[in-house]
Image 1 (cartoon, rainbow, N blue to C red):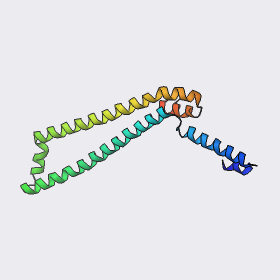
Image 2 (spheres, rainbow, N blue to C red):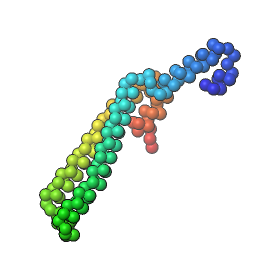
Image 3 (cartoon, rainbow, N blue to C red):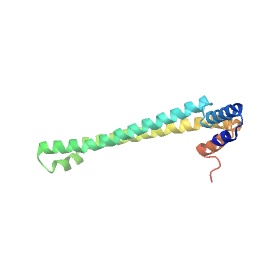
Image 4 (cartoon, rainbow, N blue to C red):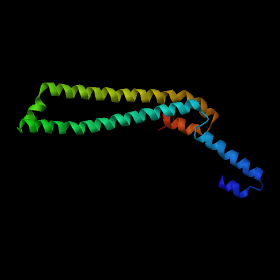
Amino acid sequence: MHGRLQTAKSIDEVIQHHDFFLDKCLKECLLLLPELIKKVEKLKSLCLQYAAATQWLISSSIDIPKLDEQSDGLVGSGKSKQWKLKNPSQAQKAMTRNSAVTDSILKFEREFNAEVQGLRPILSSSSQAQPFLTHLAQWILGVGND
């Protein structure tokens, strides 16, 4: 736009260059495709949910040893920590928690993949009308990758 404005000879040309620039921005920022914006927003939401869940998982796993150390101090024996690791009920809880974490991750993956696959028809139809979407469609859907 800057280069075109430098060569403009009238205010009408400035307005025309500005309008062209705005139209190009709307198209290339995908603001004229509401279906695509909804899909991208859903993908962003899933990514944020996954990041929050991961952050919670990390912070909760850091807190667990602190709780074990506090209960070890109450018992007053260095061997109690070994007993706790061999305790069947705690092992069962850990396995249950690991299973729940795995299930949650797989759920996020399924939802994310479903949303990406939902982009296929939108990008396929839109990329024919909007050539700048062709590269995006190829990249997201893995078309044409060697």
